[in-house]
Length: 390
Length: 128
Image (cartoon, rainbow over the protein chains, first blue to last red):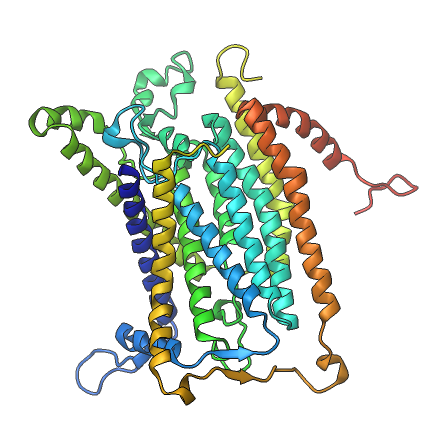
């Protein structure tokens, strides 16, 4: 029963993030820039407000999308419909399964060894996650192979290349987290991020007496974003490249279909493509929040203290349920925050060509990930008790 | 490897089912509405294939290239699964996560040597 409730909560969190991502996408595409007044919509004849085109309004846009979905299907003789349909289903299935493995909080009631706040708590979850991301990427490539045009071929080729190299990079970026927690269970990575740590503790008292000045009282949340900043920096381009979804009508990519933006594709095909792209971006953000921002943990807040105070009055179940809802809420808030900054980052940076991003991954990011892995393993050997892990 | 309790299977089924149903509800309603339309409008329309030009080269279908590409991708996937993923999973099941450190101890020295070694020409200068 509790797993069902956790699955429902995860679904609610993911849906909220997906809706927010869609709103952000839309508003960032429609936002005029202040230095180019000609891109702004005209002002109304009376009053100061802007007169937007009908496509600006969500209701008009929703109606137009619904009308396009209802109209008759477009069938192109050279497109293999079964292959396209099955690869889209496989991709959606893999992404949804990957989302169900990502934990959104620590434990039920904040107890040690309590029920994990994740729909599916897999022992080798990190390996399964990487495999599912690979499957999703290759299913995208298969979608391109269903069409017999040269452009679809090229798209499939670049997605396949990016998926294969991206998965190798993802393994290297995840390895320091595994070393720090000595576990492949995603929930253990979230548990390792509870509480706080003193960043200057290693200085010791003998080093200029810095700690006697109170530096060791300065504590930061135990998030991997702060404990392993290089890994956190590396995971951003890795997830960005691995989970971005190209499409022929992608305006950011400066490509257009034969008859206009998305007008020559089948509307329901475009719909499925959009859903998959949206879920992939939510997966990237959920992974970042769970593995680097402590999932639903609230900084400088120890749930056991609150539980100890409330339990004698209200019993055990109610406060634990409240804590569960609070953790889910904090997880969603963190996801929305990251989505907002990701949209700003996407708008303010150029989109690299496929060959450029592949070269960046193989020449720059993979060596950096190796260096980071060496650094993390050296630090873990230094901090391990005598003898180390080896 | 996938030691999952029955409750977790139920959780997974509920989540994936909700995502699938949530995603397919709009196309399902659209298809239902489409079926209610008069026959002439709801019939599927065959569209001729768009070609970029009329020369024999552009009209030729790249069937061989498609087959070769599919074979290449299938081969890559199967190779990745058989050479990397199955041994990886087997090693992890046996050695646990500390196996990663042992693997690094084996791989990193050879990687460092390989990255430092450069091809040189007959005069001893590195070839870029």
